[in-house]
Image (cartoon, rainbow, N blue to C red; front, side, top):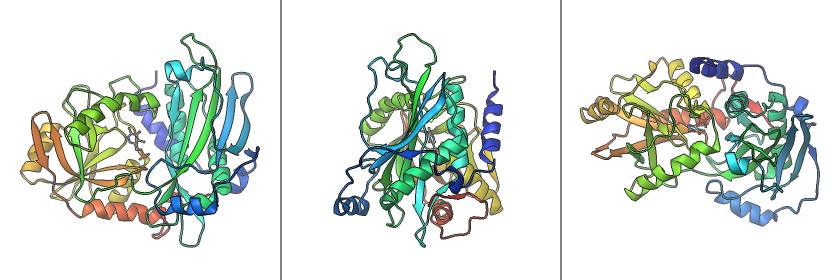
Length: 381
Ligand SMILES: *Cc1c(COP(=O)(O)O)cnc(C)c1O
């Protein structure tokens, strides 16, 4: 059995492997089928105000895997429904994994993505946990490069907007026995994205659930799989009914902070040091989390990955030792947390300047406005 710490160590290591340039991966996915493109006026209207995840570009990338042939049928096809047997195992046992990564338009018109090697490595890590086939860096990048080049006109140029890419894989074999499927479809769809939270001005309100858990030791918390999200919907409704925007999960002991349904968390202290929950196997290792740790440490700040007890955190917010709490992920980037509530507590979290500083430094690199000193950017077109 792989040890938890080994899984995460492999992820950071794999994420640093050199990537094949776009010129080398641009031919594998072949265009097929006739597209009826969205009228330019309608596209422009969407790009002016894209919201999050509700509009899709004209194409998608597809590849098939079978035990016999491995990965084959790499294609770029018109965006649209695909046919699936009602017996497809994803519909019954949930073999589904996904990624989230963005394409950013730079001021000179070129289009880039951010640390795709990290997402490719994490997709393989998720695949290993869910007993699904792994996808190579070549195929992962080939799908992104070709799709973004095909739908280039869909990359928003508005401030802070980007093209959100959603690579995912599902088990398609029609078979009802419980075992790993022998056929899979990999697909990438793209959606122009504006801010994830329509109003995060005063900070996002977070309900710390003590009734539900997202993950547990030995479970799938470290894999980006659909099932983790299905399980987070009821706690999300619990939070919404109490007037909160998002849920924060505790570890299985109910003592330590883990993460939100789709974002990692950071705590900033009065003396300038920063903490984030350590990766224990029950937390999803965010690429944004990893990048923020590197950026903060690069600025000479002390960042500790540790156990953060909820009771200690609440006390330190009340005494003023904690000056900021923020959440981060590809979709929402960096969002200040303004309020933490639970079954028997509510605390207002102060707003400070580090959250905005981290946000600006990270997005500055992503949008080509600040130097990319870590070599995190990858040119798509
Ligand atoms: C995707 C995700 C994150 C954030 O990961 P990024 O790589 O930063 O986008 C955090 N937590 C969960 C549960 C996630 O699914």
